[in-house]
Length: 298
Length: 298
Image (cartoon, rainbow over all chains, first blue to last red; front, side, top):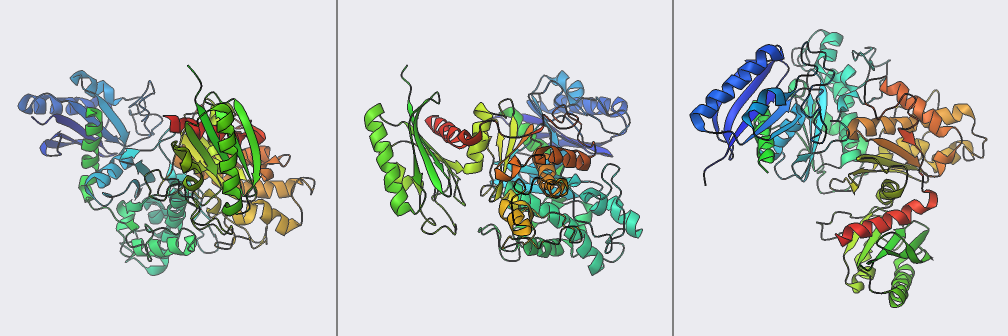
């Protein structure tokens, strides 16, 4: 049987990666488009898929893994629409406006849910019934999958904004979140690290005390994910998590805080199999977008 | 068409409530059995269902809402089995041992998931696609439903053990959790309140400062549930939540901490519709168990 074709969109804050892929994941065509505004970006996306479709055949489904905030509820009339993003021009933009012309079903999810799906399908979360993927970079966000489907409530999760214990005597930095000051993202995302110490942890040479401090904040989210989702594994990606020593420090902080309360084969001593980095690197996003398209195929 | 019959078990730490009900929820027979040990309790449960079935007809399905920890994964070989409970005799006991003889499908879930389901079906969560139910009593636990099905990972959630900011200058109490000392349950469950102040909040006359302190701890869980599950509503039940003024104080604490970050019609100003008490009172458990039995009917 001929492979059906999937249009995949990884929509990031600075660039889109768009690809035409076969059902089995083989990429037939791929390009990058600057995010800029929908007025410039969307026509380029349409042009790519028109040309790729002319060369390879009709597109049977689209998968979109996008920055947000965005409506990801398939039952909502504004499914696929950016909500209140501060990014100029993007509030109210809708993926169906550019992809609807191809007459194929469209699945839209968040970038972090897409990365989770990519890791579940082909990376570090392949054997997990429940998988939590968290990115710690410019922002902090988590996606949780159950049997390869992202879990949501009335909206996608906003794990970056959980409150964390903050000892001002140890860490006098006030935090940069415009809403909460010292929520997790306000204390541990990339911009908070640069604002506090002038450089990234890696640029600073990954000093143990600073790595421990950030690991402690991120551990609050990891422990909350365990207790409120019981995932089979936690993947931590994003630029900040590339800091040497940060994932080992996170494992230690999580193990200390759980204090043996959760007894399960998933939580190995030392948590080296339980808390891991991503396996797909820069390909997680487009792999996830293709997997979302596969869901749209039904 | 004749109503099929459901055997329902609400298994609490001190008593079981068992009932035979019609599919539509009408209870035909009901009794209470002391929990004691499986050796005394299980035969009484079997006797009740044998007699009720003799009077009313064959039982088509069982629903069990139980104290834990218990294996609630239908795909697990030990589904329906108590795991490491400190309750004498109950570790390793399995509901299938007593209910299997009736040859009907059995659905087992936690007591808090059962109460959530009861409230979703017939109480304060009727219109919610995603519903979070939390009990604050002897222990603290949460169940989250999506379209009337409880969400789980490799196990049921353990929301009572999330870490909470604890200012020893304001609240010098060390906490009573044997694993974590001052996790949420260690600071805010009924036993922590009695250990700290000698009486329950209601017995103390619900003094505003103490109510605010406990509300602040519980708010940490409420905010985490919002950010990590995005429920359409949060129900807070259990003995501690009956304290006059506690739910209003919780609403204020949650609204302050979210600080307007989550903009959604679900979160009404003041959160009076978003954070509520249960509507079913003592009937939530058995209503949930009947609903679980209905799931088993398929």
